[in-house]
Every structure is written in C-alpha cells, then in structure tokens.
Image 1 (cartoon, rainbow, N blue to C red):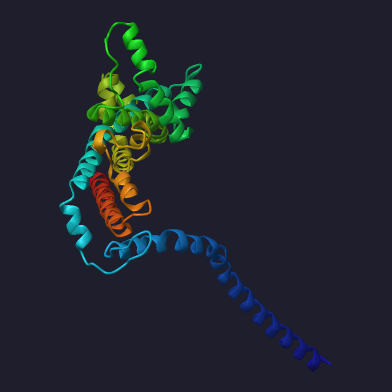
Image 2 (image 1 turned 90 degrees about the vertical axis):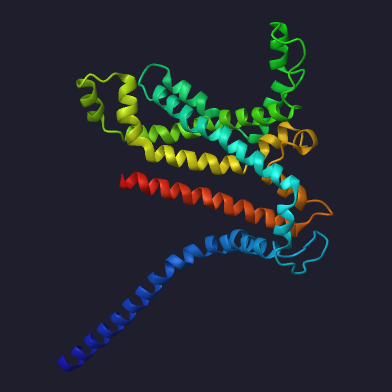
Length: 314
C-alpha cells in the first residue's frame, strides 16, 4: 500500500507539472490573442495603404485603370508642376504664420487660467470649447462671419471703418491669413491643456527662490518658467507645425472648395485630393505627392526629436 500511494503521488506530480507547462504556454499566447484584432486592423487600414501608396507613386495608375511602372516620372513631373510649388509655398507659409502663435498664445492662456480664482473653470471650458467642435462647423461659422455680407464686414461698415466689404474670402492673401486665424483659434485650447500639465510640474520652490532674490513676474517667467517647460514648447511647435503643414479643412471650407482665386491658396493636401479624385483622377501622381508630404512631415518630426534631445542634454 505505501508503494502504491507513492506511485500515485508521483503520477499526480507529473500531471500537475504538465498542466503547469500547459498553463504557462497558454498565458504566453494570451497577450497575442488580445493584440491580434488591433494588429489586423492596423495592417489592413494603415500599413497596407502606406505601402501601396509608395508602390503607386512609381506608376501611372488611374482611378479607372492603368498602373504601369514609370520609375521617377511622377517626381520629375512634380519638379516642373507650378501648382505643386504653389501648394508647397502655401503650406510652408501656413507653418510660419501659425506655429509661433500656437507656441506662445496657449502658454499665456495657461498661465492665466492656472490661477485658483472664482469662476476660472468657466474660462477654461470656454477656451477649450473650439477644440471639441467639428472643424466643419468651425469653418462654416467663420465663413459666415468673414463673408462680404457677414458680421465682421457689417460691423466695420457700421463703424465707418471701411466703405467697401473687406474681401476676406476672395483675396489671395487675406484668405490664407483668415484660414490661419481659424487654425490658431481652434488650436489654442488644446495646446493650453498641454501647457497646463507642464506648468504643474515646474517646482514651486524655484519661483519662491527667484522671488526672494527680487525677481518680478516677468523675470521669473523668462528665468524659471521658460527654461523648465522648453521641451514642452518644442513639442507644441512640432505638433502644430505638422498639423499646419497638412492643413486642408480650413482653406477648403473658407474658399468654398476652390482653394482661393484660381487655386492660389491651395495646400499640399488639397492638391493631393484634387489630383487623385474624380473619374480622371491620377492615383500615381497623387501618391507621389503623398510620399513627398510624408517625407516633409517626417523631417519635421526628426528635427523635433533632435531639438528635444539637445534640450535634455543641456
């Protein structure tokens, strides 16, 4: 009997070990099972279109057929396409006109609303409201405001500031500036929240030490606050630059889908859409434009990473 009991115990131990190995194998596979749906969606809707776009960039693919390999013909055509250079210029101007304001103005707003005073929660919500609003709704509101018979022109004429309506939406320069203002107005609240998080991590004792040394609010801002949140400022600059370089909705809606007078205010994304849609859409050339846009935005991100690295080393 003792021998039989020992045999049973050894058998039970072997069974438990085999069961344990099975459970460990099961648990090692479980994370991949959870990741599988997300990976499948990413591969199907992100990675495959990305790779396919690069392949199409070297073909003469059309919406209704085609797809012969043409080498770098699309990129060569791009160099001689005045519409491409116009779109590239407008996108670059958009970055230059938008980024400085989206780096500085949200920081000032964040410093104002971080104060604990009665009613400040209302202003935080008010500043953030444009962020959650649809860009289409925002664009339509500003179109009604800036139209020749809109509220802004009506007020200016009532105050006798102008005798004729200001062509905010029909002048080549004013249309681009108007679109920039809409982008800045809509982005202020978002980057304000980013700065609020950064300001909360600035050590309070640094401000107290600077105040003891006789530094005023302005001196403390430049000597304490700015150095402490400089990496966040670089990040905000990068995010706003990439978003500005890919602008579409603001110009599209304010111009009534025309891209300004004779397409003078068209952006790169608008050009990609214009070239690649419709029955005569040129998917190959549109894909080549998309690849160039990707390379330019990737360059902006790499530059930001380099600047952030330099800030951390400093």
